[in-house]
Length: 77
Image 1: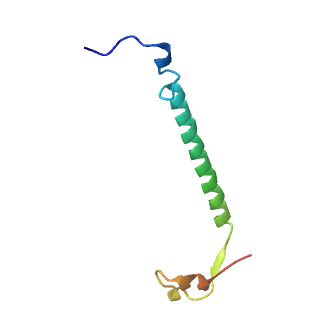
Image 2 (image 1 turned 180 degrees about the vertical axis):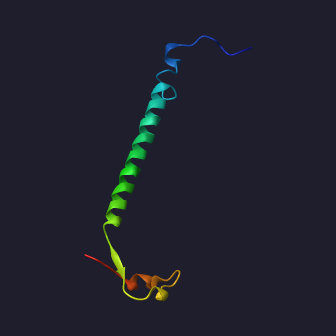
Image 3 (image 1 turned 90 degrees about the vertical axis):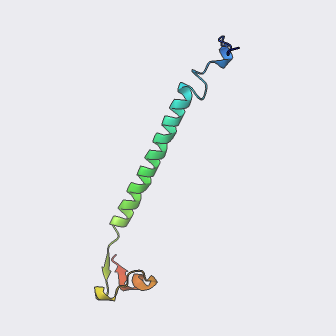
């Protein structure tokens, strides 16, 4: 009438992927993703923070969303 209460050795969940091993795999995977994204964010920030530019014309010539805005600045070297 009820579920069987006897558990075989092959049915134990402690070292299955839904047990502690699965938990550790998930934690390591999430921490490695976090580390990778943090590394790429820091390197991108460093690369963009070291590239300076100056505006060539008056700031009133800039439009809100215009593809021509990139023509109004030059990158300093």
